[in-house]
Image (cartoon, rainbow, N blue to C red; front, side, top):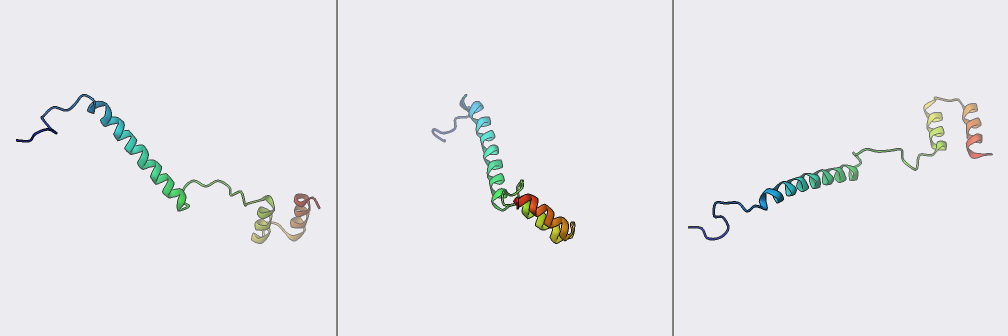
Length: 81
């Protein structure tokens, strides 16, 4: 005979706390996965604050999308020189 913890009937608050704890567990799991993905660099990524318009111009010139004269003209516009 078992004494104490289970007598065959569940307490009334189990019907309230059970679903709340399950929702909390799911939310916590999703937050941990999202944090891990961001920490590994796999999450959603916006434009890096280090990527300035001048950096974009340099990349376009390096890829050959623009020629030297266009690069120089746009560089002057961006730097104000």
